[in-house]
Length: 120
Image (cartoon, rainbow, N blue to C red):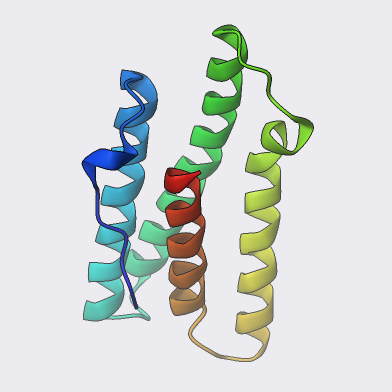
């Protein structure tokens, strides 16, 4: 799987958001490492849960931060945290039912999501 690496081009010059973006990259990298060691280990699932929870927290924080600083936040951006959690739950439910590696699918999804989020 292709991982997201932190790049200086992702900097927004908004320290709170930049720090959270860096933390998202770190959490994603930690989840990859744990998955490579043992995809079925409880630590892998806990790492994924932490990543998804932090991403949801970040989306909510980012929307409120932008509004506080005079940026217009569209409705889809305000609901980003809930939408992200619903997408992850759909992935988990599907792959648990089919006894496939749900962790790999979540990592792949989160990698695409984070790459898009950082570039957008």
